[in-house]
Image (cartoon, rainbow, N blue to C red; front, side, top):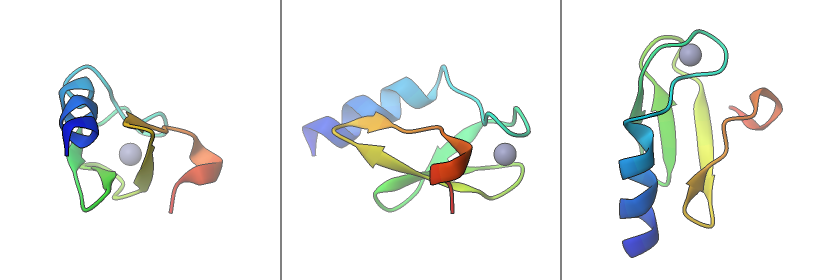
Amino acid sequence: MVELTKALRELERLVCPVCRAKLRAGDGSVVCTGCSRRYPIVDGIPVLLVDRAG
Ligand SMILES: [Zn+2]
């Protein structure tokens, strides 16, 4: 879970690219606290691309 921990540390500096709300940790992904979009974590890095969000 080292990679995930690193990703979660990154989260403190990141915001949702859609609505600029803060992100929180989900299950293998990050979840926007504003619009509830889910972004995947790939190789330990949150991928904040709108076309990858679910
Ligand atoms: Zn959002």
